[in-house]
Length: 231
Ligand SMILES: O=C1C[C@@](O)(C(=O)O)C[C@@H](O)[C@@H]1O
Image (cartoon, rainbow, N blue to C red; front, side, top):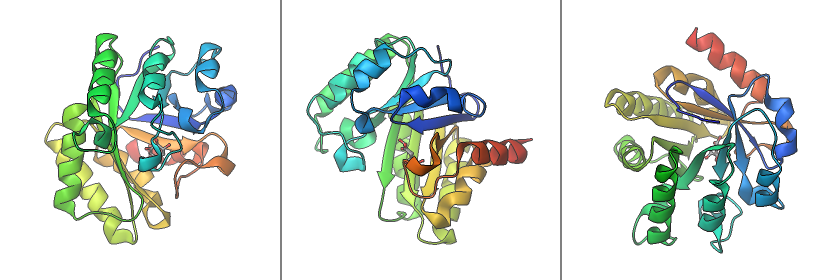
C-alpha cells in the first residue's frame, strides 16, 4: 500500500486498528496512534484492513503518551509492515539539542527513505499559536526534513486560526508540501478550510468519543466539509 500526499489525504486517527472498517467510507488512510495502543506491533502484524497506515508514535514531550524507550525503534519496526505507507517523526526529535536522540531519529528517517515510505515531520503547540514568522519558519523546517511538514497549534481566537491559514498559503506557494491545522474550538474550521490553502493531510477520529486532538470534527463531517469546499 502507498501514500503520496500529492492531494488532500484524510487520516482516520485511532489506537485500535480493528476499527478500520468503520473508516473505509470516508478516510484515505488510518493514522495509527501507536503511543495510545496496547500492543501496537502485534496489531500491525495482524492488520488486514484496506486502508494504508500512517504510523505515529507520539512522544510524551509532544503531547503523546510514548516514553522515549524504544519509541523510534518501534516506528522502525512498523516499517516492516506492508500496510505502513507513511510514518510521522517530530521535528524536535530530529533537531540536535532537542528532547530526543537526534541521531536515532535521523537513522529512522533514512530507514523510511530506504524503503520508499514518505515521512511526515510534525511540530505541535498545545498552548497557543506562535507569531506568523515563527509559524512559517517551523513549517518550512519541517517541510525541509519530511515529505510533508506538519504543524498543529492551538488557536485561542480566530486571529490565530487566520495565521495558520495564511502561513499554509505562504509556505505552500513556496513549493513545500504541508499539513496544517489549528487545535481547539476557535481553530476547528481550519481543519475544513486549510486544505483549500494547500494543507495535504486532515485528521479525524474513527471513534468520535476518542478524539486525538482538541477541536477535531468527526470523520464523516470532515470528509463532507472538505469535499464541498474543494469541489
Ligand atoms: O499531529 C496530529 C494532528 C492532530 O494533533 C490534530 O490536531 O488533528 C491529531 C494527531 O492524532 C496527529 O498525530
